[in-house]
Length: 52
Ligand SMILES: [Zn+2]
Image 1 (spheres, protein in one colour):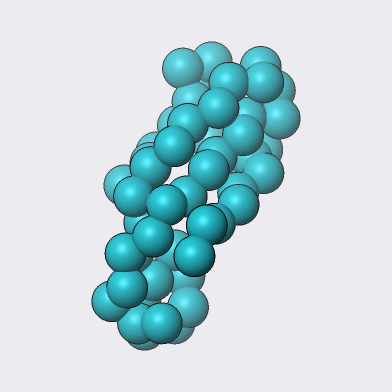
Image 2 (cartoon, rainbow, N blue to C red):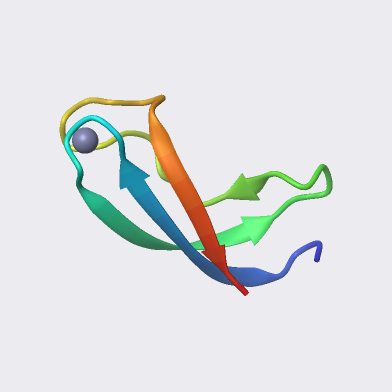
């Protein structure tokens, strides 16, 4: 739901690193976490799961 906070799990497809962040759903249904890139500099190849 819009404005709702939930846990987001991000898994880097390049190096396998996992991150757990807090995300917020915006009005378009996009999940905003503030996450920009992995420690391996990957910015594009991620698996993203949400716990709600
Ligand atoms: Zn990575």
